[in-house]
Structures are given as structure tokens and as C-alpha cells.
Length: 134
Image (cartoon, rainbow, N blue to C red; front, side, top):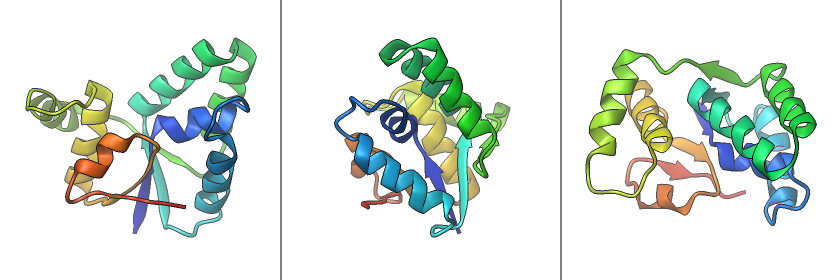
């Protein structure tokens, strides 16, 4: 059993002004306490997370968030060429996912992960992925 964490959770967690901050803190706490199995994200999500955190807060908070993720029990998987190729195929189909989101879907499909923690409502449209509602 595993759960994938999207950047929307991490960014809301780091930004006290985000409308989802309190919920994100609760989600991270619950997930890290191992209530949902292994906790996974990818290097692409890490990149997106610290970049968005930098834009919305400042360099210090973005670095603190990055260090929090790196020093936590969250597994950061690398997007390899197989995931990348599958993501590119998904990206070109008719949906509104970014390429990073397409890498998430590809990764989850290839590794049999069906749960995701995200505030991105686009993921609700996918049949084989369960958006965890905390």
C-alpha cells in the first residue's frame, strides 16, 4: 500500500497564507504517521514544489520545505525514461494535466499506486486514482 503526494499539498503546507494550509498540515501529519502506507513523490514534484514555494513565499521557506521533504520518510522516486515516455504519451491526449501531472499519473499507473493526496481537482476525473479526502 502506498500514497503519492502532489506538490499542491506541500505548497499549501509551507505557506500559512494558503487557503488549504491547515488541511495540508493535517494531511502531512497523517500521512507521515504512516496511516496510508509508503509515502511517495517524485523528483519532478519536488522540483515543482520548491519552485512554487519560492514564488509564493521566499527562498528561505522554499529551502526549508525542500529540506523537510528530503529529511522526511517520504520516498522521492526519480522519473526515469519509461515513466517519462508514458507521461509524454498521456500529456498529448485530450486532458488538462501539466506535464508534471502527467508524470504523476504515469508513475502511479506503472507502479500500481491508486491513492494520491492533492488539492488539484483534475485528479478527481481519473477513474483508477483515488484522491484521498482528509
